[in-house]
Amino acid sequence: MPELPEVETTRKGLASAFVGKMITGLIVRRDGLRYPFPQDFDSIIGTKVTEIRRRAKYLLIDLDDGRVLLSHLGMSGRYSLINGQDIAGFSGQEVETGTYTSGKYADVEASKYGSRTGFSGKHDHFELQFEDGSIAIYTDPRRFGIVKLFNSEEEEIQPLLEILGPEPFEDWNAKLLARKFSRKTTSVKVAILDQRVVVGVGNIYACEALFAAKINPTTRACDLVNKSGAPSKKLESFVDEIKSVLERALAAGGSTLNDFAAVDGTLGYFPHQFNVYGREGHPCKAQNCDRLIERIQQGGRSTFLCPKCQS
Ligand SMILES: [Zn+2]
Image (tube, rainbow, N blue to C red):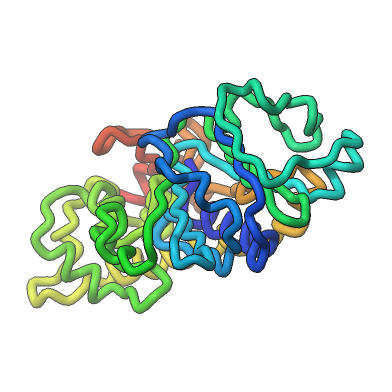
């Protein structure tokens, strides 16, 4: 599932390709994803992208007519970019622009893009076309993604956005987390995934940060707060490790960004080096630890931990 670093990397890639450019075409191949697509989706044709922001895992694409196109990648969404020259060079075909097409896969054949993009057609649900001939294809096999369109002055009252807690890199610290945790009797692992507590700490990075901070994931959140309401040393370490694991992932994503077009046009995914996530049954990587990584279920999600390092 795309987490904050992947979304931020996607944001950077989309921004570097499309800010300042006009949307000249839109192809939609189904009615919607998790929710129906905006009824006036095609009204973005003719607008220019002025900025692409991120709030939690929502991409916010600012249009020059004062509206915002919100895009969430859901469980399996991704954007692939193809620049106009690549398409012309690959297939010898002109990109259609100024068009709005709605239909089921029929309108654009996958072969137009060839294997260069990984484009299969089946899970490519919409496509934005730009004035320079470049395109962004949105692919999402599980279709939990979200697309919304609203006026920028209504951003604060968007139900999806208004419940969100602080961004981990913006004035967020252990003191604030202690305040949120002081009465929470749920496990720290479940509590940290709550987007009202802090945004963008998904399952992978929660597991990794808990391991790095040597916290047992089943610890009650309130037990990491001192009686005075101040954060415990462990909670302080947890916050540091969350920032550090996210920063490393962001750096890894950034370093592969330059290659995206050469590889497969897919943005935001990069090889991860995890200590516990996905490593059930493998030896713990900590020095002088001879235990195997275990997996437990918490709140319907898998948690990976070392029973010794995180006892
Ligand atoms: Zn260990």
